[in-house]
Length: 459
Image: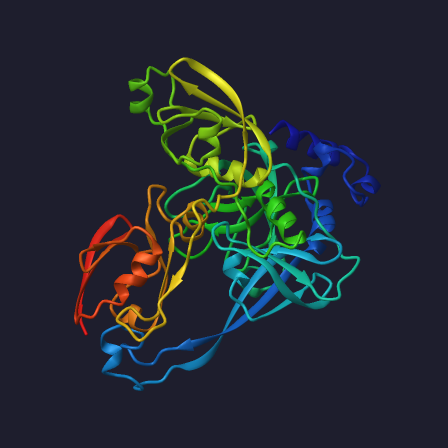
């Protein structure tokens, strides 16, 4: 309270002419009285985004159902409908690179961006990443635009003052103030991400807007709130600037999808029980439960049972935090990893790699007029695991696409094929051979998300 009371006492004690004088704050104490200088420098780089896409609205309740659709074919034809969304974005380069949320523009067919000074631009989506909820846009024919610089989000501390700037409810650009109220946030409700928490009000339409510090630097991209009412309850979340900067760099370099380093590690957060069982004074780090043979962590000497304490000097207390650290550092970086094992604490250098294409996928598609027509499969490898979100212990052959008859019999992308009519499936060619079997009775065993299912059908 002292920092706020002292300047006020000076104002009331000053002569009348000094009381009405308007000037930018000259120091940190004075800037705490008004956010106007920060807003003036940052608001021009925060934009409104209007996105639209055409969706097919199904009128029949059975449309798309693999069984009932054959009986109601043609009933209640789908009709196209334009779906609109409203959000915010942040200009991060003067030549028109804009960051927003994937859930705002990720599936849009038309994107229009309106600047704070009411200039309008058409925009193209150049990279979208649903997992991080980030989308990178390029404004058409844009030059010399106001842009925000990135702050190192690892230096952000709980209690730092921040401003959230965006376009809530479509009322126009607004600014709300608050503090950083938490770091390294992740939960089931928030998905797989890793977030900065703030009590600055974030409402619908603020998505994709800027969270800035008192120097006008971009701390994060506003993305979500936890609420029961639909409005802000003071629990908002932003994607940290370090990850945003890495995604932007890949987009500017020509990438169309964000490529994350691959760890090849399964792990869990340490808790008090695990720490006590391992004789640790406190529950820090991520306990490694399994490593893929191609894992760069395995190559550096880590083994199941080791506890990763930090990556590049930053703590990793949850698997989500560890994934964030690796993603922000990017493929090709060599980083020090500190871990605890039975002989004590060690630090090794780990080179971050893309998920390897080992073994080769050897994809196969069934196009002949047989029972599994429309089925596409491939051999599982780390790259395919990353693309399809497969468990690290997945092995064998996975369904990459299921259309036509393959969809009608119940197969889905992501199904790991175990056997077809009693024939074990070890590689994609086994599927092609089994599909040619001359029989009307079929039984296909699959692993779907860890659950073993048997699909039976007659043709």
